[in-house]
Length: 390
Length: 146
Image 1: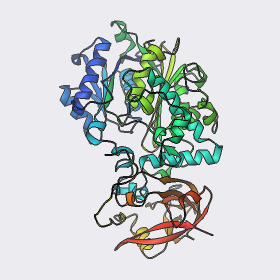
Image 2 (image 1 turned 135 degrees about the vertical axis):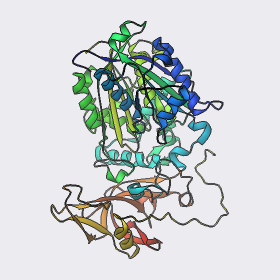
Image 3 (image 1 turned 90 degrees about the horizontal axis):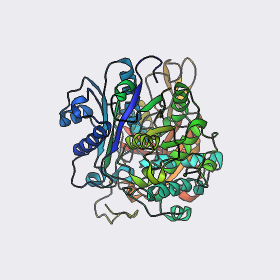
Image 4 (image 1 turned 180 degrees about the vertical axis):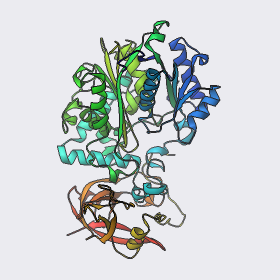
């Protein structure tokens, strides 16, 4: 990303065990992921001078640093829901390139499935609760759910562009195809469009199989300078460009256009900063909380025109050999979604760019995009990563 | 937690709808709804209408004044909620959550009631009906405007 001197790179990336961790604390998941990412980078905690994470209460990252015994001189716990980890990586890149920090560890950990059950989508979290602080009350009085918010966007997209339930279902089918090759994935049995459409409706027009799984799990990555990476036995992945944006918080009624996510702002900005365009991307890791999330994201990032997302994802458009191979680990729809999946997007993007993608490796992948989406389509954050220095 | 969408039988008395806690920005809005009126804010400088209530105009930061809305609007989008474990809503399943575009311009979330959820459509005309939810607050629900 830097035009002079220091260039930020990712040198370590790993997931924790997933999708079910009944015997681990949330902080232990952070720790396991951190150990693996640092080992991947050939470093130890003693090499880390910067730390970033985020969770659901204030000073969360500070607490994880304490748990790990870190005393960092750079920390960040920006909370953007599912997009948080792309934002944290962008911030880390700036700080590294500015010379404020040398080695940043970013971790994520969650035991949502074991400790909360499946409450996030429809059981009290994410907008289903009657209590909401301040202005969040305005959309909190109607019994809407997290799934319901995305359903409202899906319905509007269908109305405006003729997007079909079959096209949305195609996203889930492709993610399951990829998950079939991922031995860790939560759901691996192949599904058809008909399976998605015949799964029960949770919030019309979204069926159960239009919704992500709910999991335990975490991940971590390690960032430093290209110069430092040259002294290590690693394949550095370059941060070519990054950007983030928001249009609203928990009130979907404040979203200007339900068919346009914040990716429409941060996607083009990230590509411009990277000096490339959507056509240069070999593999994408796109937040897939729901099938509609992916349709909006491919449009907003510029992989197709607004309104053409349904046709773009249909007929294996996101599959290996498709228009845009996406979520090669099976995504949140099938592999793992512990609440804020953004870190998994970074880890899988790095694996692909290193050629470590296994059965779902995209041949000769040189440029990857990781795009997180958080809240009620509230936040977006795009990372453009590459195998070669910009 | 079961996987079934259908709530278990609940012998407890019905739980009332949640009530908002009015604050400095919103108290006149909730009080008006309590009294059967839907208000919007109008900027005194640029004349844009807005909701939810704020201290200043969203478009230009000008001063805002309250005005009564017609209560009429159209469905911008909607969903039929078929799974929600939170009371009292789980007892109302299936019900419609809609985003309503008011005649005056602002978009608000509410429930579309008094009709079969399967009959609701994007673009459908609706009008407000009011329900008191506390001593100092009401809410606007919407019914088909035929």
